[in-house]
Length: 300
Image (cartoon, rainbow, N blue to C red; front, top):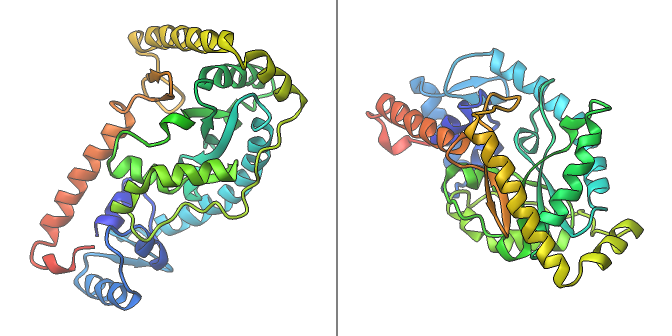
């Protein structure tokens, strides 16, 4: 029930296989089926065609199917965009993140990217990429280029370790930089504490082949001047984002625009959406446990 409860925060029912993949304990299929049958019989979990949910709302199944179909089209676009972004200086690995990485999309869904850069060149890489993004507003394709989480090779381990960061990490869909994304997996083995049966798949991911623009740009910044420029860009970006946060500006999703800045990472402030989801999950678990308190041995 805990597994279904987390996804219920996003109105997303799960298949039998997904429940097993995202469960906090590795389950044999026989154990899973027995538990699901019991929970269904007691009315604690509901069957929605091929899906399971903690609420008896058949509309959730149809919503999911439509979201999965739209996600398939979005992922084709994401693959092309990731290949293009890999041509920017110092980019080492690219993965799709957010709702799209969980195979769900709506008409308002952005294409979110998680990006790994060369050590101490994150801010040069990010600046080049975001300068390009400004031009995408002219064509209305800015939602294809939501590059909101960066780490460099020195800081690939995710510092915040909770159900939200574990979920966001384990559902990443690597698109470019196979070797780098495999290193990311090795650096975040802690995810297995939350999802022992789920693995980030890097099979079939292409290695990045630097083009002329990238090679020339890196040649310019592969020196002490590059170190100074990277640090300066970090401080400049931090100053600009601090002003946005102080003004309580919000993005298209209604979240306050706030970012945590460091030499080795650039990411959304966890005090906003991340902490909100973790707290909602805590409350959801309490609610589900209260409902199922007479059958604690069957809690999923």
